[in-house]
Image (tube, rainbow, N blue to C red):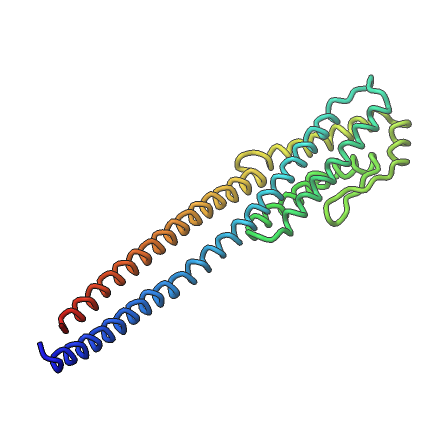
Length: 258
């Protein structure tokens, strides 16, 4: 082998190596571009799902509090239907106080669920519940009269205000009529609460829908994470394979020069 041919071979080898390196860089660029194109979309999708899941979880919490408040209100309402002439005035007053507090707690929880961020259809359910509670206490003249006798007034937001002095006077002057009024109001609220808390009721249906949505979002999040991991593994394998094949090509090209 002459000096000229050796130099010629070396030159050829160097040219082959440069070409191979350029090819390798091009392949890496293609792989990187593909990854950077898909990953942002996956990241955006996962971020959206996480945000939606957080909102849904918050709504579930709101309706959970509403369910608890409504259950307590129902118990207090039922208690007013079981009062008798033998019940002490102090206990009658306590029973009405419990009803008053738990009813307002239910309305407050419902209004909070109605204004919470999230599914508008579920917010509408909470608004409907407030309307139903208000209607139970004022839908007919007899209910309105019973409220008046107990010193109770419905406000615009659905909550109650009480004139304690008026109730005390009513209980003292007409105990049987007062107990009858309490039984009527208690029965009305008990009935509405049972309907709202039932499986197909406002609260029951809202919680079922929101829990199903939360389960779906969790499944989507898991699927996205699995896809992201699979794509990362595929990109890593592709990069390793490209480096290996490109290295062999460069080596062969260099050796061919000699």
